[in-house]
Length: 431
Image (cartoon, rainbow, N blue to C red; front, side):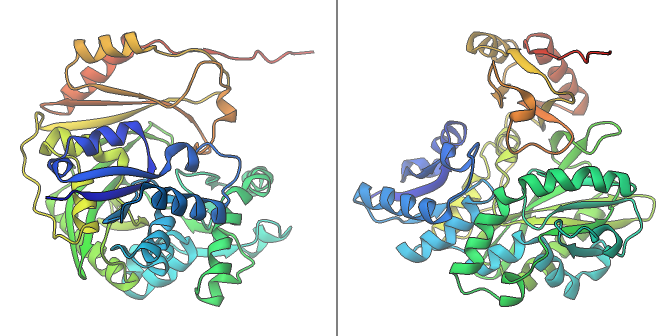
């Protein structure tokens, strides 16, 4: 039997290993359309160059793609429908993907079917000196670019002072995402009302409560939800502390989120694609609020699914892209619960030392099932890391499995005892 040729936009070693452990690996060859280094930690995104580079790499293999996939956010998710149209593979439309990713456009669509589940929102021009006065929201609220990822340039605004502090940072750095995003609207047939917007930022009223992510897919118009992952934040901070699976939220709340997901995805018109949707559940008011929709699996959750189900949800991504309805995931994993802990620093400094491969190997041997994925290297300055949220610096992802939450937390703290991160902080000189 001839093998299926699957091209990945943003292939990296961590996820390649996940792909190669799937049952699908017996029938698939995995190729890089673009490497992870092509889409992350870059000074700018040249969309034309990325499209042409990926096209050349696919053509250079001499094989016809059977599927083109991505598990990372922009620009990977947007390149999939563009490349799939060129090579005749199955994928969502570029318009549907952008309806998910363009935060203002997405809210306009969501408003038609789930108005009671979304915050108040306004678009604004960060280069308008009177923008603060034009935002018809009372603080606190959040401001963010219309297109961003990993909470890049997202700021909580409690008063005008916060706004005035955030705006210079946004003005200086918003081009990283705006320029390539605008390229798509200028070069592909998309609605002029969004292509010609002068506003490039959003202000949204706050959502509160427990946070989680719904994982699902659309296959031939049928929307299916197959997992809910809890997103636990740092105490008194907006940054994530860990992802934990399966969710501990009440089943009734999870069912409501699944119903809201089906309505939102159906209205957007996303088809033949995985997706993940971030939600808040406010227990006090029993209110479910939708934060954002991503037209891909969350690669940050792949190890969690593998630990619990015995197979990562890369399998869902592949089945949909290959034109097969995914089979339900069984609970065949080694662990009942799994966590992805995000080790963070909250102050700037230089990384003098990070765990070496021997240290990481010893941790994996001491605590079976543990995976440590470094996000940094020795010699880096934390404030120069790209793709961080506005309030912290992510040092590593530490994946652990266990019987319950108590065991997860215990294993994580064991890991910290055996991993060396040394950060040199600059002392402020006082005259």
